[in-house]
Image 1 (cartoon, rainbow, N blue to C red):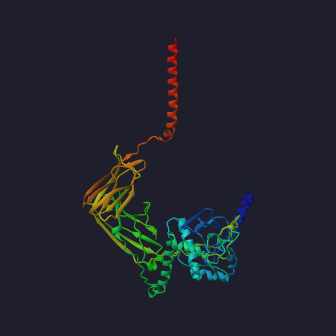
Image 2 (image 1 turned 120 degrees about the vertical axis):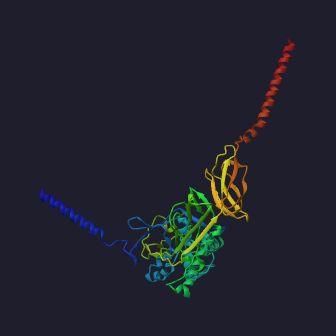
Length: 488
């Protein structure tokens, strides 16, 4: 029995050692210059597309998602970018020397430009492609194939071959660049590229070269645009968006907000947190019962952060997942992914301290059913100051809105009527003084359900004609009866 137990223990020990050695074998994810970068990835573009650049002559549609997977099939990076659109050129670039020339083009900040992850990936993809073309000396009016300059295509189909492959060396076609420059959403791409080049120019200045004290500043926050409202027993500011001085705004990727108790910091959805991406806004709250005499002083400090997590790495030896029909897509396999891992924050921005003090009164807005006098939801309430500027706007829940405002004259207006109601009183003028508490009541009445008479109207001539015939028949019957009686 003891021999059997010893044999079992020995077997288990050998199995554990074998498994350990197997797991410890060089992984497919072994690094390229960075421990977190796998050597091989599989790339998969979603069938669903997103189109934000749209004109009457061109639309730029990209996959909603670019997913990169490790060999075991686990998701590695869901925000991958495509470096190259031309499959033929991708194969040519497998010479390492040509890859070395490309690394400079992607070791750059590609900042977040939208809080929506899909929109963000879309814009960042276009920013990367536009930037690559500019660095390669490709102008806006021409396309390029093997160094030959070609005119702008006349329509979107000319940039693909008969197999659906993108044919130009330039990452964005001339017609696509024209659409970006002329479309409303394209301004996001153009403005971001301006910031990137301004930042690189600033880095070359004496101030930019001074790494010990670079003097990066945030713009002063315009407190005149901040409004206050009461939400769930908290007095809170409207959303506040810090911005950076233009020359180095590209480095402003994140920020932290510091307040003292009893204040707290929340995001757009009311979740308490103190760190944000640069394009996100924050609110400062204080419990309403902590505010005395309609007077409150907000003190908060914003610390700008440069976080080097926007750099992307290109994988020259990438294995590509060849799904059926993959090469018929205009998007080829060359991919850029974020694999840098966690980097230490660089808090080179000077802390921005802001004080916002309000001594005023409150306006309580109640949107009601005129018959029941109950509060109703779904109305949009907008408050204007004496200059006609909007100082507050919100859609109502089934409760009153309480807004704290500096002294002055205001117009409270119902700018959107609640569903299934029609307005009676849609605006009210209110004067706020220090310490006052004013009320504005906006009345609505339920819509009356009017029967649909359209079908009935169609049959009126028919009914009238039928009634006439019946009347003639009845009249004829009566006359006939009378004649019969006379004969008898």
